[in-house]
Length: 391
Image 1: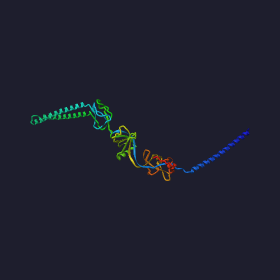
Image 2: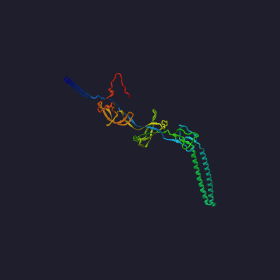
Image 3: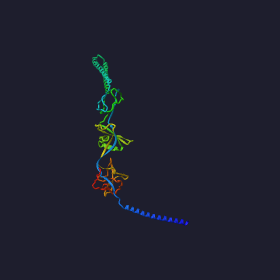
Image 4: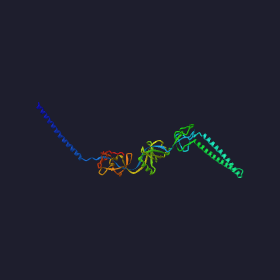
């Protein structure tokens, strides 16, 4: 039994050794095959990268700052009475446009008119007293010349005449004061504008704190908005060169209103890092309304004959900002550029002549000097059919 066991163990060992030798030999052959495959790959040439290109455009590019804005009136007045009285007549309607000086409200002025009459009567009485004293003074001058009365009596009459003249002057001032008080009963428009809601009616008792209505000036009108602190230099430089154009865009489809920059605040808000700005607009058609939200567009300069390319063609990394263009031998060439201004999907740049073929698609697979091939050139042509590129 022991001999049979030994024979079986030896046989198994031989079989295992033969199998290991066979597998090792097969692995060597496979490794050699892989090495030969790699060598073939290295020995081949890299195929060209398929790319799309665009030609830079030459155009004038306006540098525009954009912000959300609100329409604010140049002036608005909250009308209050200057006396306690009752409304006699309302001469206007809500929403009406009024001219400067137009009569809006009439108050009960009977008391004021009575005071005017009283002041006139008082002034007439004082004037009559003055006239009597002046006649006495004139006679006393004649009598003192004839030495019928003493000089002291004449001096007394003279002082009485001067006192009476002052009393007449005070009466005239009192009459003017009563006339001013009476004028408060007629409330007129201090400026041209649109009337708001009317808060009183005929017979209403009004006091100094009572708000009658408001008048808002609509033409011209302001829009107010804030711009980043970084834009302050461009704003000031543009203002020195002349009027700065501003557009106000309202609801979609509405025509943009054109105005001029009118105000730059004298301080920057340190918390928000912004500067407050206003623009003045002619508003004869009342296209802008107080409280309305609009989009303000400020044109601070125009880059003349700028080179414009799609922003998608620009690459930025640790080495700088550049684009790939097709160079000699259909190879990719790096061209450093600098963004001057971005707008929409495009950007005005410096560093290009304008006659290059700028690569827009496929650039992620490129290296300087890599061979490239235009996508249109690589597409198979079909007889009897033509392909039209969308513009």
